Image 1 (tube, rainbow, N blue to C red):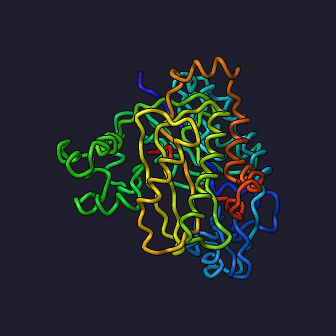
Image 2: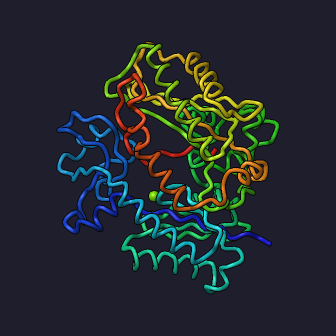
Amino acid sequence: MPRVILHIDMDAFFAAVEQLDHPEMRGKPVIVGADPKGGKGRGVVSTCSYEARRYGIHSAMPITRAWKLCPHALFVRPRGERYAGISQRIMAILHDFTPLVEPLSIDEAFLDITSTFKFFGSTEMTAKTIKDRIRQEIGLTASVGVAGNKFVAKIASDLQKPNGLVIVMPGTEKAFLAPLEIERLWGVGRRTLPLMHRQGIFRIGDLARMSEREVVRFFGDHGLHFQRLANGIDDRVVGAAGQVKSMSKEVTFSHDRNDTDELLTTLRTLCDELAHELRRKYYRGRTITIKIRLSDFSTFTRARTLSHPAINSGELYNTARDLFQAFDRGGQAVRLIGVGVSHFEDEASQLDLFQSGRSEVDTIDRLMDRVKEQFGQDAIRRASASRSPRQPHSPSERSNLDEI
Ligand SMILES: [Mg+2]
């Protein structure tokens, strides 16, 4: 039986909440993020309202740049608790439509409505009812994509933002994807994009059409994964509520660092924190990724997949250190450094751990954990143990490593 997967994504979530709570901000450019400090601030834009987007402002942009583009915008600090509270209410609404809800972040979730949509009339009626309830009960708009799998549903929800609804009929996934730009494919980032372009791949359909042999020759085995997505094939199930697929720790320095020993000390502390959290949540992952942002804001990730899951801080650090030392930063100082773990063992193989260690996975707890990660509350508390002076994380809607 074909599946019916729905991806729901709140529109400009943090900024929309600010406009909801502060009527005087409605219709105005609102930028949630770091303090611009009159153009001298550090950190980035977390989210901005659609009015601000007209000035070319977007998430993850340096706050100083946003300040230059639109100095009269309303710059506000994020209110994590408030956003988390609203997120909980949204997730509760979603659970009225199916037990299979997988939150991806504070304002995004997948729903598998295969066996429940008939109660609400049709897939379209289900999507509309969800949107209506969120608008009426919360006062915010959401965009929804509906398709036969997660990948296509997620792409669909983004196409008609804000307040969008895009339904991809079963069997039309490939044709739907073909004309879209290749950078919409998960995992095609700054590094992969030029490689794709060099092979004449500009649209998703260009990759879908390539022979398997060519794909492997140009992009390695990983290319086959991209190609399956390009053909609209994605078998991943909508996971248990709150299932986390990657975990990371990062820090933005108050001033850029160039001293390698000092940077490695910070990396060590981040690995300690990460290992602690992995253990606490019974996760074991095989892929270790480091993230480095240089003083010119260029951002790089380097990853290595181990043959077995890394569990302790020493293993994490040894790999992270190797990756860091192999990275040539061309003499530039480092602005941000981070480490993450993904490629978690699947739930079945973790079952023994679950049974010995925990009773059930609570959605709200997981969401709160993610919010804390996003806002670095833990990092702030533990920072005292680190010898490197640190700033709290710049809250941003940073993407997880999980969509690769
Ligand atoms: Mg969103």
